[in-house]
Image 1 (tube, rainbow, N blue to C red):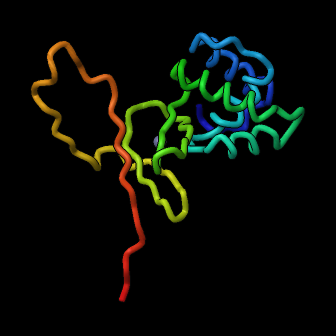
Image 2 (image 1 turned 45 degrees about the vertical axis):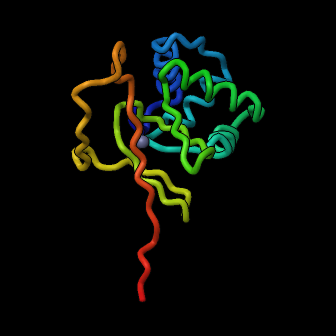
Length: 145
Ligand SMILES: [Zn+2]
């Protein structure tokens, strides 16, 4: 969903349509969370989604945020990325793309398309096919001496 200056009702209708399109029942809380998360292409922790969602209106509980993020991920509305063996980010872009992660700033960003080439094996274990692939390139500061 593009960032826009839509009238709030129009934005809400668009989010409802998006949720229904992913077979998610559009409850008030789900609409609120989806609106915050899908406002622009972004990578947010559950904590950040909580803060963004509760910046306005009736607060949504932390448990609801976690459950809803899991539901959205399961239905393919967003994708979950795990970095640093445990830190989860929720990505509002679900197309296949690689990421850059900076552990110092804990910032996850998209790698521009077409900058990564990977050769996949011609043969895979019998009876399998590639389902999905995650590429996260970890960054560190350059040591200047
Ligand atoms: Zn991304």
